[in-house]
Image (cartoon, rainbow, N blue to C red):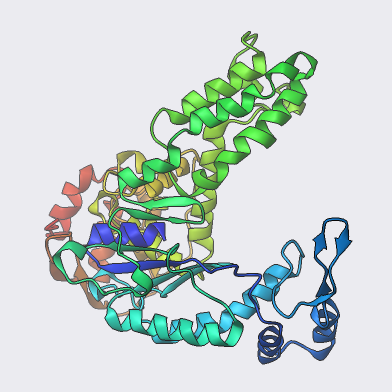
Length: 457
């Protein structure tokens, strides 16, 4: 949802996000509907029998004073806290999600952005359902589908506690009306405990963070004389710093906040007396440190995990939004190719704060690549500008097998205002130009003069 909001802002797209609040979501699931849904998904009779042991003919008693009421049959609800409850609820709500996927148009992205498909209309985690709507027909389809689902499963949507956000050019167009008296917001909404939206709205995520950390640490100060250094590190790592991870995984904190929190943690560890440098505390115990958490290092690890998922797992649809947002870096039009460049020379100001931090974390690594001596057209996938490969111009020439030269149309990457230029190139010309690219490309001027091409960006 963060990427969808940023994508609409940067590319002038319009979409509405409706965050549904389901009233007593787990407690209202009808048992007859649940077993019908399990059968529809092909769950075997043996497993159904075991689930039936847990839920069929279940009863509860109400304790009033010193006595108990008569047994009351329980025909609704999934037991919260049971390891099986999450999977059962996911299967129970899936028919609703399937109908919404079929009936909603989702976020429509222009083909000029290089995306072949529209984005899905849903973002769901357990009972937290966020729906993308583009017009009044989408809203009507949502209302009709929810009405049918409520009759089948006994579920109920609490429109009074639901939220809606219109992102993009909402002020210049008529926004669809919402049911239940729900109104469109313009600033942001809360998704899974994280405030998403405008910059001012996202600041709510960090309001009082330092004060909360200091308050948690102060509860342990009376016990500090009895705590060993290892015990202090456990308190900080498991009870204090861990409360920050949920928001730090998805958002970039304000400048200076993490440094202040880290200082408070180190002061608590030393009880005011700093005997050695803080960097030594961050080392593992086996290396002479205390294993104290380094928040900046943990944030970098979160960003590297995002880079790993983007580069090696193309199944999630969020990879498409990530690639579109990455193409704003340096106005080069690169997405995954950015991880092959010398990023120190690339202008990252056009990126969102999150993906800018991803690329900054990537620069921690010193990436080395071996020259592939096998002839082939793989070399044409290499970026021309800011590339660190190959370093040896002689190694760059990988002649393909003898064959007639083929020509193709080469299109410069369009900027946000212009359409770019088109000219014809041959394989021989392209190989010659590739030898002149890389760190010695002179900022692109040498390559432009060699190709007789000039970007309009």
